[in-house]
Image (cartoon, rainbow, N blue to C red; front, side):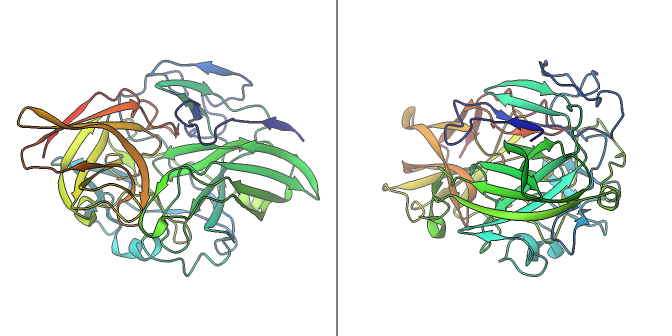
Length: 421
């Protein structure tokens, strides 16, 4: 085995630093040279040692990737404008479609709806299922990455001998809901011999949204077997998700690593690099994207959107809590997402304070919850809400996920956000 690198993550995400990564522009470029150490960086350090813009910005490249099992392995195509970027206009999150049409970020285009919001079908037959989970596997060129522990980042450069950046997405095959907070480990073997073994990092990227990933070193070309294992999630489940995703599961996936597959992996430059905005997510029919529901698609009464540290916090209230959640009264749900693309922001510690008539009517934690209609959100039973009540949202711990380039300075310094309901 060339390398063994373990991360003790698991259920205690609030007390354990998870990892973040940023994609390198391409092999051999300044700042992407192999190093064997991890170094602490300031909030504005980039892979090249320059100053990154504060907040969300367009990364400098669009990585293509080899998707294992998608018609024999294919590069993910993109959604968005011809230049591959998403923009924010008039305070709304918008993404221009490939035809030039504009749709809300978080609202898939018609061609995407069938592949992201419905049960698995065409294009997913080769993606393995175990227990409640379906697994996808893909890889790109090795990436520089940043780890996140609390509100601090550490930069880890590419190690000598790193061959690829291996990624996995885990989802519910019935609803194609991506499942954060399951934890995922990978064992790679060739001809029955273990090559590498890691608990890989939960990550957030503009092209992929939430996924798991890490750099791996392979001894050469050939066919490898990746054993992907999840431990189950400790996130509260509601509705049709109640009682599911609690048990561990594993699958084995064979994948080729050859000159031919490497030719399918590239990092072309992206226009508008460094400007406010984001690269549009890839459009891969075989794989879902972890998008938050569009505000208009959320159940209940949508009360508005607060902002904190570039995150969009969409607030809705339901007359009663979803099935499986105890308590009487109205249910407050906060759907946290990125700007521009509306990607889910998981693994936060979020609390809320509700006031009305100069009195505090609710003060407490908003629990991480997974529900088929609300998606991944933060929620609590709060009694009752009146029009004009004030809501203060406080982030105790920012998202404990890896950050690809374009997100490395965002979602860390997250002040209180206020909203009048």
